Image (cartoon, rainbow, N blue to C red):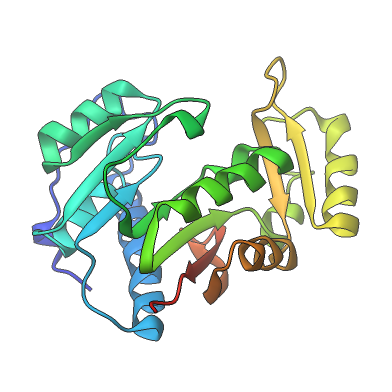
Length: 236
């Protein structure tokens, strides 16, 4: 792991992920790096030169990626333009403003590493399918896609812990997750954005359809909360 002194300590006053608990905030970033490094140790290969952090927010994970790979070109992408600007100014990232229709977002070159922390956790199944296909298309040969998702841990507590969805929707989404591998419910008064539950089998199957091989799949690996999958496209 990296020396914590190398991680930029500046936190934006507009960072919605910061609740005042600095130790936990920075631990989220280092836990992301830990799982990325675990997957890289299995895949082998050189350090990533081109990295995409999407959604980057205000750099909760970006700052750790920058500390780990100071020479890499890191692209920060989010629909939160203030967050993208902060990552540009604070961590020297290449800024790319996101779009709800992610297919409209383009990049000049493919990436060695794509980190997707807490995005498909909020999307319905069709959108997650489309997103994973789009993200896979951004990988270079030998590149790695790392995605976090809600799995068994969240499914087992969503009826008792407030995740923001209406209580009457919870049994149905858990039943869908159990039977079909994917459960979802909108947030109140939001169409197409809410909370998802994904079984590992569903995720592995979709990645296989895209020609990606799973390198690592681990429960509660990010912040002791999200499951994480890392998948790669084999070099020729």
